[in-house]
Length: 365
Image 1 (cartoon, rainbow, N blue to C red):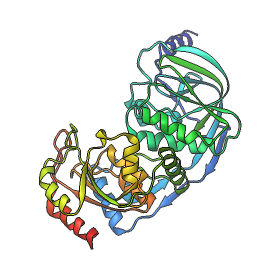
Image 2 (cartoon, helix red, strand yellow):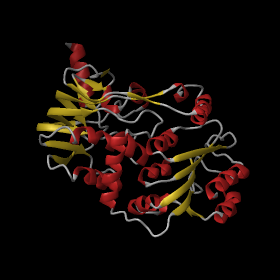
Image 3 (cartoon, rainbow, N blue to C red):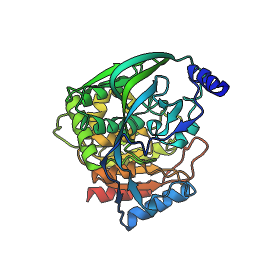
Image 4 (cartoon, one colour):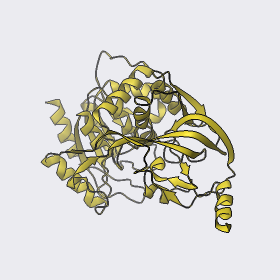
């Protein structure tokens, strides 16, 4: 009894130290089975290079399995406004936050913060995923929005999508674009210091794997179409070639970027700083892009909006990430990588201009 009261006090203060899984819950409905992606020799070589840089912590060269897609219908769920986690019987549901490793890394479930309970009737769902997607467009477009496909395409009853009003403007507007075509769905807003006890909660599985922007073809096509329509993209008269600069960023900068600029200019590339554009402008720009060069960073998330594109991604030798290689794999874009020197403590590095020139020559032929 004392233990129960103790945990009850911790939960009132927003602190959760235990977790549970609903992977085998009787309310689980499988919507699509898992499947395996296959890679050619050059793709496998790049994935092996990435695995080495991570000391094989993630090794997709051994195979890439797209997870099964499902929803789980749960009763008696508490939904936490400070984190986006679902709680069942006093334990955080792992599948509501991604995976156990994210539970371990995130303070969102362990901060002392008074959460005021509110009773809510009806059916609810959410793809709120904090702190990961707080201001990060990669996590928003790959960890959050794709999960709504599973709910909106399969749950026809009236359902409320829980969101926070203080999220980034592009997140609120893209959520509205996605929900617009589904009259059964309504967006409702939870406060940071609220805990909703909902009558029924539909929990969608995460779609993207760790360090992967790969989306199954049906989900990728659905998301691209909703955002193209929402932002009113129109085909421009001329295709563009763009270089995404991180010169103003603190991390992951290409230290010899200035030396690359004359080379890029010779091949018709314009320098873009994504942070200087509205999100509609970013979507339109990438829609029109036929070729993109960029150091690894969240700006490459916008490849999702390209109609058809060739991509050259720049990496430091000690941290070769696979997110956008796998995004391009799903979109059938031609992807290449140039691996530079080892990054410093801020992941800044230099690249070989001759290797960049070689790629530029290949796309000009």
